[in-house]
Image 1 (cartoon, rainbow, N blue to C red):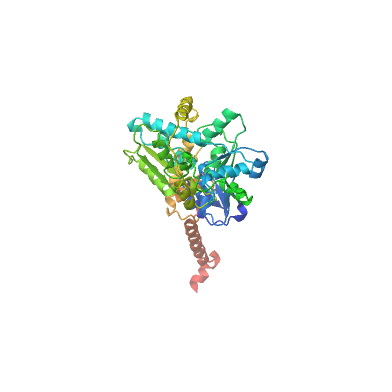
Image 2 (cartoon, rainbow, N blue to C red):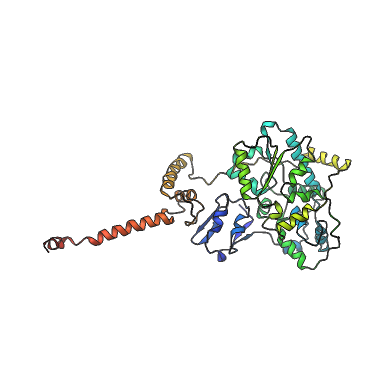
Length: 432
């Protein structure tokens, strides 16, 4: 599996800060180097935030090479809030001045909001609340830790995918490059969920492109006061998607919008336990404040939030625009191509019988461990340690507490042996 995070082994000091931050226990530190289990990684970027040695980084495509090929750009909404002196409309203007074509994704975001609103209108009350699928990291988290909630996810594509699909159908041009605010959206391009292949061709970080534009000395001519009236910009903020959906719904929508790792886990647990009665829609963003908090952005998320909130948004659609959206909705271009399946944790055995035997051994090994999840063994928890032992990827003595017990036992045995004398001298020793 191709991910949006890469490891720089030369910089890794084996400090184990990263393993404690991972919400799916996908990281190990073995022989002083960090390892990522690809089947468990959701590319949320939490490990990048906690790594103080810069041993983890973004695995993005080569921006310079893509520039030389004159590939069009599809920018995540968070990109337009990255420039202090420019309006949101100034960012695409700066790209055009640099000779880069920017795709307009506003129609795709309107279509996504309309599609979600129709799903809410048509869903029976007992099937609510539905869950947003916009954040790829949240969707992958649900697959691993909350698989029973997959039936509540909206069967809608990311509007970024829809924008690329519309571009391909209408222009026949080459797949665009996504300007991604986080590693999860880089992975969305390489290993998409709900479809076999992404309509987007490559992905680079927002930070990389922003710094390239600023260093080129391009001057923007759009006055800061001329704010954009683009609704898609709100999707960069927590609650922006829900607000957009409300504008297309036929009845009032009660939505919960949260951001950040802890809040996301809390609301998904509450939903799993049936504590969100009366709620219609749940919008979760893994990054703090929304996509503007992505680890691949260039600007402070707090300044970006002010910039988005002070942007004037018009909710007026012409009759022609509404007819086009209805036509696109009827075409089904917004719908996921296939169902999203749960991602099980790594199996303990190859078949059912072997798995049951290994499960019994896992419980036995886990019972021997201290269960304090200290991380000194290079695993995020004692449970992960027990799983690695059963799979043959670790030894019990990798646990420092079990190692101390073993050393103490060996020391006691050595001390006992040191008191023994040769058999031929035992009688002489007694006589003396």
